[in-house]
Structure formats: structure tokens, C-alpha cells
Image 1 (cartoon, helix red, strand yellow):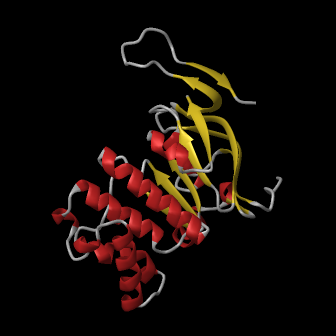
Image 2 (cartoon, one colour):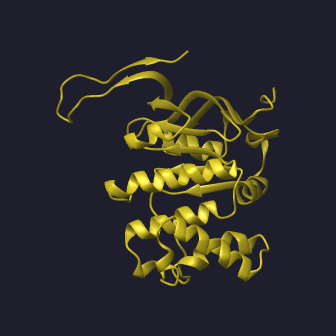
Length: 246
């Protein structure tokens, strides 16, 4: 078993994954992500983008292939050690906001810090700073039920950023946002990641993301591809064409 190069914070080799119903999710994906890099994973719906993030972050166990975080082989860790690693070193943003309904916005954002032992005052200050950066500082005392969908997603993004994770996984982080908000939120996320030296792996259908990340890779049917041509409209005849990367 060969460990990844020292400058790669994430490294995967020959990842294969099948969903519980037997359908394929990944078919031999390999990749390396350098420390501080912002990588976008693109591709059509069902191409394996979310599955790849879930494997890289340890959310699902890898049955075939390898995933390394620094010198730690995630593919050999048990559930408890994977959970500890996710809590201490990784951040995650879902495409739909998942917040604690009984807590207000700043309490939701501060929660990861308080779970790590930070005092309430310190955690609150950090939470309010991130809410301000994401233009929802005036919603700090509102509960999720009082917020619009886009506001809840901004709170979720702030919560993922506040503990300064080593690696941030963002699965379609701007999906609930209006088009006019997406550029601002993506720019805030990537700027914050660079200023804090975070490594980011995100999935996105948004063309704006291409100009804000360091590098992109494309998936199709669970495989990495180097070129992807999709029809201009849903009723366009013909199949999508691709050439596999080597």
C-alpha cells in the first residue's frame, strides 16, 4: 500500500463504488488534491459527483480502492475513527441546508466550535463574523423556520467554514440560491478558503465556479473524462460524446 505524495492532502486510487441497489456509482476514479487547492468536480446529474465526495470524506466506506488524507488511509479506518476525522478535520456543505430547528442562526453556526470545547462568547463572535461575510448578519437571531431557503443555505455555509476545517467538501453549495446570489456566495467561499489555507473539493453545475477554482475534473457515468459534449437541449437527438482521460 503506497502512501500519497507529501504535498497531496487528499489522494484516491482506483475508486470503485456500487450503491446498495447494485447500481454503479464510481468506476476506477483516481485523483490527487494538493494542500490549499480548490478543486471543482463537474458532470451531469448522476455522474458520480456526490458519491465521490462521500467516499473522499469518509461518509461512506470504500470497499474497493484507496483514499488517503495526508498519511491516514481512510479506506482502512473503522466507523468511529472516520467519524472523528470528519468532525475534527473536515467540513461539509449539503445542497439543501440542514440546520438545527431549535437553534437560531448564530447558534447553528457556532455549534461546531462549541462541540470542540470553545466558550460560548468566543464561538458567538466567530459565528457572527461569518454571518456578516455571507450577508446574513441581520438574521443572526432568527431560527431556520423564519429564514428563506437561500438564507438558510448561507447559514449552513458559515457553519462549515467557522471551524476552519483542513478540507471542506461542498456538494452543490449554491443549489438553493438565486442566480444573482451564486457568484457572490461562491466568491466568498473561495476567497475565505484561500485566506485560511483551506483545501476545497466542490461539485457544481454553475459555470461561474470554473473561474473561481484552481482546477476542475469531469465525471461521466462514474468515470473521469477529459472531454464532455452534451446536447444543447433535452430533446436534442444523439448521445453525449466523451473521451476518457488517461
